[in-house]
Image (cartoon, rainbow, N blue to C red; front, top):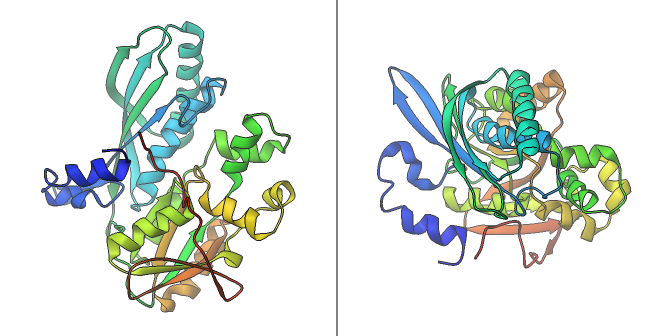
Length: 315
């Protein structure tokens, strides 16, 4: 097994409980006492998800944020987290991480309930894990509900975190983009407000193109993305340009943690009103058709898919 998707496919034969959603989703949904509890687990690995010289406080924020983003994609209200922490013989780093995690927990009003701590061999990369628990008031959108004729939407802007990573690695650029990479903001309120309106929803962690294909595959439909409709910030345009290459770079970059979702045409006015009400841009970026896979269109013309659609773990 060389790829993340291969391992997940192999594990599906064990994930037979309905709560697992066939491992096609970002989270598990457990019915308990008339309430829907949503569970998710995400990890950060040094050198893969964060750079060795990223501030520990920001790594702590990001660990919490990426887990809350999965809950946001299910329309869930965050309740609590469990932490898995790897001690790597660096007391100052650990202390700064703890301070940063405390600030993040207070910012999102989340309880830390426990977890586990292990020690790593000298020189090993840090590995951090977190399980987040949330509660859903009504429907819990999956990746698998999109239907032909639905509109494909995206919150916020994309590409900013990918540009921020380039800046963290030494390229000149604005602090606003670096902030999007180091301190992503999970769209928790938007997810809860959107959940009753959508047919499918997930967060964008690995890139819009690869995540749109995952949504399409789970729903057994085709996704069409209009490259010229992808929402880009002015900071990103100033940094990367406005040509097709810059848009493709934004579409394949990870770490944006925006919400990608589908909804029927008749909900468009309500979605746009919600966007205005919470002060978060929500953009139509394509549509869902019968068929399978992913199509990319720019100014009405089909564009070949890039060789790399986004980030996927591989050996």
